[in-house]
Length: 97
Image 1: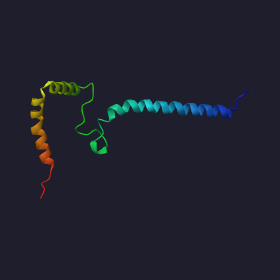
Image 2 (image 1 turned 90 degrees about the vertical axis):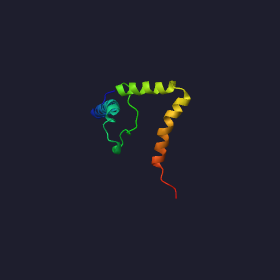
Image 3 (image 1 turned 120 degrees about the vertical axis):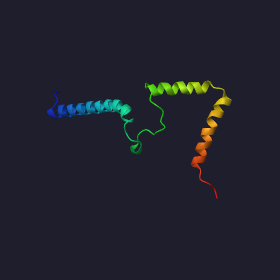
Image 4 (image 1 turned 180 degrees about the vertical axis):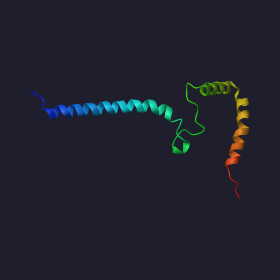
């Protein structure tokens, strides 16, 4: 059975299309992990209160601080968080008349 020129051309075109899509997917996967940090928040980027990414110095500091807070007794932890939470809640609420 001989293959016609048309069949070979279709096979090559399908192979080229599949390879190009696979290449784009792997490139986008690698770029997307770093590009999210550079997109402004208004354009769908990371919010200002997003935690730091793993592997950075800020991430290590955040994990140490989280571990320090976790090891504190519950009474001390609640007292430290209450004033900040109360002031934030009062700042966001409008007076009721």
